[in-house]
Amino acid sequence: MSFWDEAQQCLDQLAALGLVALKDEERYISLRQVNLLHTDTYVMTAMKAFYQQVVTIEDCKSKLFDPANSELHDKGSKANFFAGTDFIHFAASKSFNNIVGLNAYLAEDFRLNFPAYIDVRVRRGHTLWIAENCNKATTFAGICEAAKELGLYHFGQLTLDAPLVAFHLRTRQAVEALKPTWAHAFANWYFDPAPEGCLQNPAHGRARCLETGELRRKEWVVRPAQMASAFDVVEVYLSHEVDDANPMPDFNKLGTNYWGTVDARVKALAVESRIIV
Image (cartoon, rainbow, N blue to C red; front, top):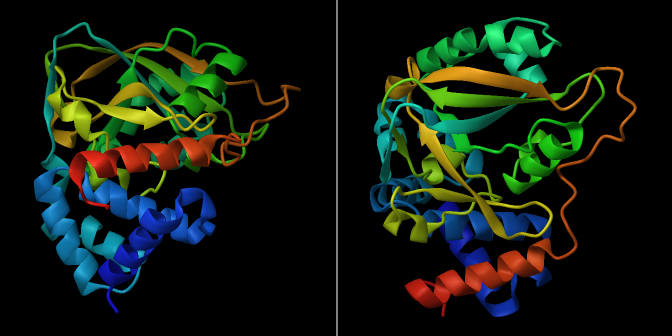
């Protein structure tokens, strides 16, 4: 049985039982399938073909990252921004340090090494996720709240020795971004395809809040070709100092109403698309 067949079976279970009744892995597979079916048409067609050729999600992701399929990361609804537009980008400090080969702990270190961080992402062909400017992402509470609103589930448990880094960015020239697709999300089940964002001006994605499951902040990806000279760093804020006594949040811990809200969202998409009946 191909992974496509398995995913469709989970999707059928979702339609029959609802998201809340499924086991975690069944939820994840079915949500990935919902995301795939509602993403950019070109990406959906290509990824469906990948799903039908493999038996695991890991095999499918390997195909996605194959340089021969790099055009998938250039697909999506375009959004154009003028010079002087403000955005925010979040990074886990450990990931940032691994990328640039540092052991930075100060906001100024992250600011000075942001160009190197971008250079590496460009060389690796990685996109940069950005969101609408967030003026509250300047304190521990504000950064943690914004990270939850941006659906950053993969950040996991925040630790004393690994603060989050909030980069407040400004475009130095006109920049073309993309509404994120399934390809940019790397099959993450907590991504929402936000197909209605294609019709907005500018087109945009919507991040799913980890507390409520609701769609909150607008988000985009910037491709390597646009990224190299796109941004100036206005300011950098760290969630906490390494010796901070604040209790560290766990981004893997979802709000009590999360699954119910997402289930209602999936059903609404189904009614609109007639994919699930």
